[in-house]
Image (cartoon, rainbow, N blue to C red; front, side, top):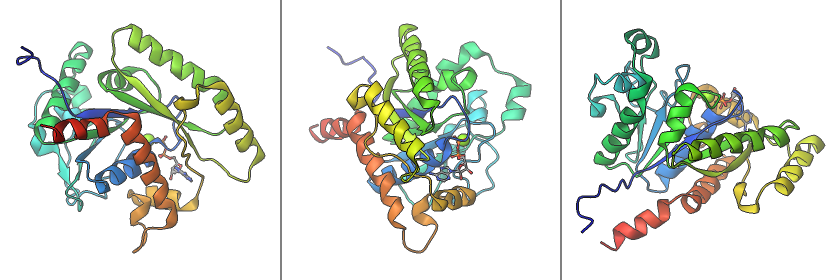
Length: 273
Ligand code: ADP
Ligand code: MG
């Protein structure tokens, strides 16, 4: 029988980018919010030491501890998780990177601690984790991506993309060759300027270069409201009393994520039990 085989049902989705400033954190906050609004128990995790992801969403901002504290093996996971106004959305902030770095952790232990984190999230009833990372696919970001089921690759619509996207994909192939199970959920174009010819040319070139299903259909336009939302540390849906129309963009991306990852299948499977 398969009775003793541990099957993890929580789905961990990381985001990764070579460069900073591509809209990765903005994506994580808005996507986690949309997934939660669609009924998924979502945990937004910040692994960027310089992050501050979603702290304004949390009901209490007194929390000092988070992901890095969990990593050092000290703290109770349930005490580190912050609740938000949405019952389906919880946040694990980055926590005290400096204190934890001083205390030190062994890189060899990181994969096991990340596996513990996913298991602890699952025990809390989390359906999916959206994990923000620091730019680059090395160090902690590499370990985090390798521990996840899927990675979203946000990519700025600029000419360099035609070279950097294949490079990212090669790095992920290498991770898989090294035994990681992480799959690419897709390339998501960010900061797209609809009227801009260079931006449009890059989009066309990438679509020609990559397998058709590797790119998200929905892209993220460059818009002042996203800048405003991330300055406030909230999803764009919450900057005004009524969500602006562009908030729907993240519902589209969330719908694609449900299809591109095992999320929907997961719900169907558990409904049949
Ligand atoms: P990263 O996490 O990749 O470093 P951020 O999400 O922090 O990127 O975004 C970098 C900057 O660009 C921030 O000031 C943010 O407000 C802004 N920004 C992000 N997405 C957009 C967008 N779609 N349109 C306009 N500005 C954006
Ligand atoms: Mg960021």
